[in-house]
Amino acid sequence: MESWYLVAVVACGIAALITAVMWLKIHPFVALLTASIGVGLLAGMSPETVIESMTSGMGNTLGFVAVVVGLGSIFGMMLEQSGGAEKLADRLVKIFGPQQAALALGIVGFLVCIPVFLDVALVMLLPLAVAAGKRTGQPVTRFALPMLVGMAVTHAFVPPTPGPTAVANLLGADLGWVITVGIAAGLPTLIITAIFASKVLSKVASGNVSLDVSPDTSAPQRKSPHLAIVVTLLVLPLVLIVSETAARAALGEDSPTALWLMLVGHPFTALLIATLAAFYFLGKKLGMPAQEVQRIAERALEPAGVILLVTGAGGVFKQVLIDSGAGDAVASSLTSASVPTVVLAWLVAVIIRVLQGSATVAMITAAGLVAPLVTASGQPEPFAALVTIAIASGASVASHVNDSGFWLVGKFLGLSVGETLKTWTIQETIIGVLGLVFVVCIAAMYGVL
Image (tube, rainbow, N blue to C red; front, side, top):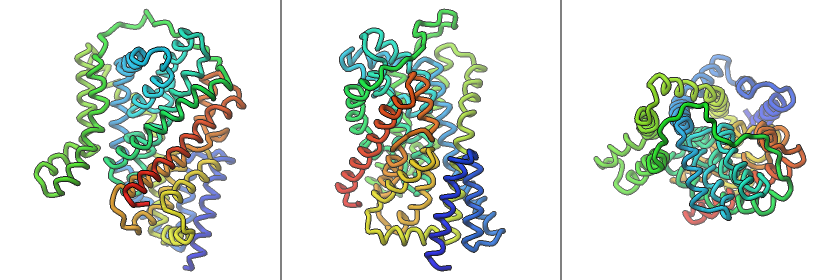
């Protein structure tokens, strides 16, 4: 078929997807599957081939992402339920002192959100921001907004959080490189945005959080985990994954050391080791019964289910684009725009994010569209990792009324719609823009722009 026709089919498919999610309020999982079937049939695929593409797309995506997100969710829930995350937060606030408490809470949000979903981290850490506000007599937003900056940066930039993990899988990016680039671009983005949020955006609204921050004396008291254990467990999977990537680059694929590190440092194994260690150090060693550890693991997997289904449906959409030839047609048309792939990926993610709201859907859809470009470029890493973080940055821009996160933040901080737009929406946009700036700088440094 003509390239222009295939591009038009993809454009119609994305328009239908956005309409279904935003205006018809159809769940993204159902909308993505429906759009995949429509694009496949209109692109000339037979019904049998469409079904085969959907099956392989779902299986190939979830075969990797499901294990990473599942283990990461369990690990994060153990960190939360044991009190390890709260201990880390308290210590960092004490180290930085009241003057720098806002930045400290930003770092806390960054660290805690590595294994913990953003909404869970917000509920868990908001009492710290409220307590800091009461102790200093300043608005709670001065501490809550920087904390949210840290959460949002990690949620978008650093695996094993679902968004960048799914995009890395769709683009074929090395997860070690994604973590490295995500942290390299994320930390300066966090510092600049957190300071701006604390100094400027917090003056727009003081917040009205109705939250009791006094300790719960009725809850059973357990031993508190040692801070060194918490920090070690938190960085362990990241170190293992990055070490595997570094060993392959330095020693070669066939080196015995590299081969063992490929096993230990694979995301599956690294997260499995961290989760088993969390079961012992944050569970059994602190006196937590085995039955409770099991209940925590089961509870952790409940919210992961919806995310995995949406991610799998995104993999279906990508596979249909590839098998129908529509992806190559879109890639050819995008290449003719003479815009660097990193910037182009960011722009695609921004457009989809603004139109339909969900950062996850924006990431997955953008990854499906630019994946042929990444494959065709033949560029070595960290190119695919840079495109991954560029997409994550674009999907962070302009969270507004069609984004569930917008309402979550407004509700918990007691902000009006206007105040949420002037605080949360602005800082999310700053994160997205700065993320692209630092990604472009890294890409220029490696000569893979």
